[in-house]
Length: 106
Image (cartoon, rainbow, N blue to C red; front, top):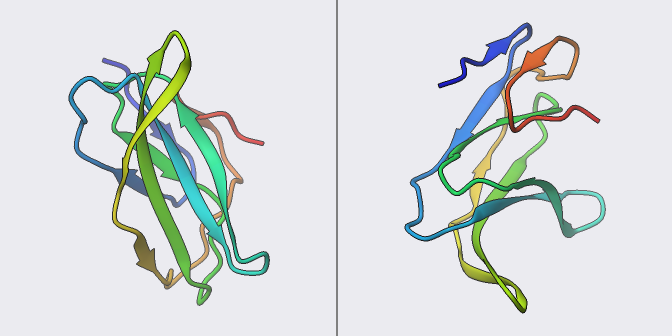
C-alpha cells in the first residue's frame, strides 16, 4: 500500500469500486467550453481515489466518473456516475509535490 503525500491544499475524489472494472475515466465539465473533458484515466480497477487539481474559489466544479472494462475489441463503458457538483470555498492549485501512483501533474 503506497501512501500519498501532498504538499498543498487539495480535494480528494473517491468512489466505490465497480466489480470487474479494468479502470476508470474521470471527466470535468468545462464551464467556458460547455463540454465534458476527460482529465484522467485510471488504469487499475482497484484504484478508487483521485486528487482533484486546479479549482478556483467561487467557480462551480462538476465531476463524473465512468468505469470501463478492457476487451479485445476495445473499452466497454459502464454507466456514468451521478455528477458531483460543488463550488470551492478556497483555491486549490498544483503548487506542491505529489507522490502517488496514479497522479501525473500537467
